[in-house]
Image 1 (cartoon, rainbow, N blue to C red):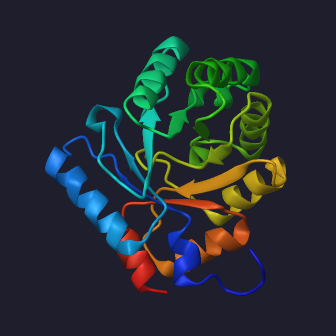
Image 2 (cartoon, rainbow, N blue to C red):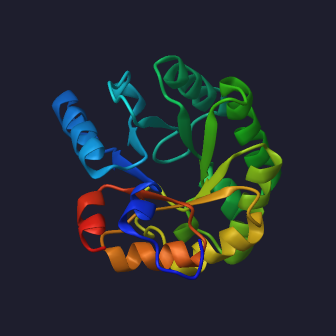
Amino acid sequence: MSDAQPTRADVAAMIDHTLLKPEATPDDVAALVAEARELGVLAVCVSPSMLPVQAPGLVTAAVAGFPSGKHHSLVKASEARFAVQQGAAEIDMVIDVGAAVAGDFNAILADIVTVREAIGEGTVLKVIIESAALTDEAIVGACRAAEQAGADFVKTSTGFHPAGGADVHAVALMAETVGGRLGVKASGGIRTAGAALELIAAGATRLGLSQSRAVLDGL
């Protein structure tokens, strides 16, 4: 982004309009898609069990290993592969956060590689590191592992961890670490235009929002 403040259209083009609540119904997903099209956002992000999604003109993303990341890599890979077969063009996978806490970045690398190989190079892979639960050192290590494994984005948060969601410091550190070679997705607790703009200024290139209308209405 340039120094100029992003426009409403600029921000809309960065948004994954997201519905990952366990109680979501097919009607809720249909409403999500309708709202996404009305708002002019880039993508919708849903749970894999809600696929396939009829969302013409929108990118469809699904999650894998969500929200804990404590799934075997082969389970994440199978979930991601099936989601792609069901129409997902992007996969947001959760790492084993405990491996990052323990500093076992080789385990994170292997986890991400397993998913990448399952979905192929043509599918966008975003890697959720749960940044609020990590030290700066662990954030850097997880981002480096994601890049080495062939990910397209690093992503702050699931939005379900009690430690919290996206913050400016983590986004800036992630952006610095990947140096523009990967995208940075800020997600979790972003409810206002001001918060979104601060994260974009820090280096976010994609936003995961459930409150997309409120954010865009503030611009």
